Length: 180
Image 1 (tube, rainbow, N blue to C red):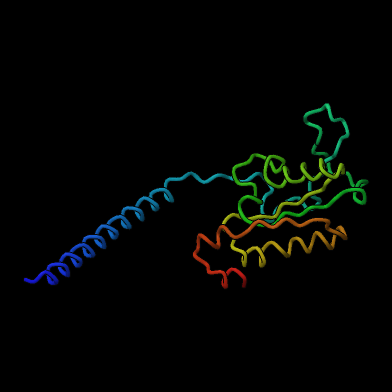
Image 2 (image 1 turned 90 degrees about the horizontal axis):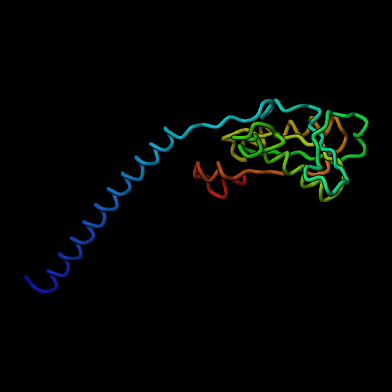
């Protein structure tokens, strides 16, 4: 056997060994991913989540008292403030739905509304329409119509926050598919 033949054989052996190792590692990784998916506990959203969010929204009342650390309060839906408040709608997937939080005030939507209230020193009425697992297309089909209903009822929306894309990546959607 010539030297070139031995080099070819060694390269073939190395490639064959490497592909076997990569295949075995892939099988282990796939089985670990399946195990995690099957055993990870599913967290629940707060009450009245997803498409069942309160139609009048939740009002965050801004207080000017800077010495009070908890200076934003969630108020009863006071209809007298409708024209003096900022209106914010959050649309999206599980973070918007509030997965893992006991109330919407603790979740992304409530914390966003509080931050906006602090920044602009105004009351903020917010709605949080989200559903775990939705892709961008699902949000467009299932959630955006809810925003349009709120806009019809209240006349104006000052800010829309959109959270999406993670589920598109998890499902392996390409940029072209994501844009559809």
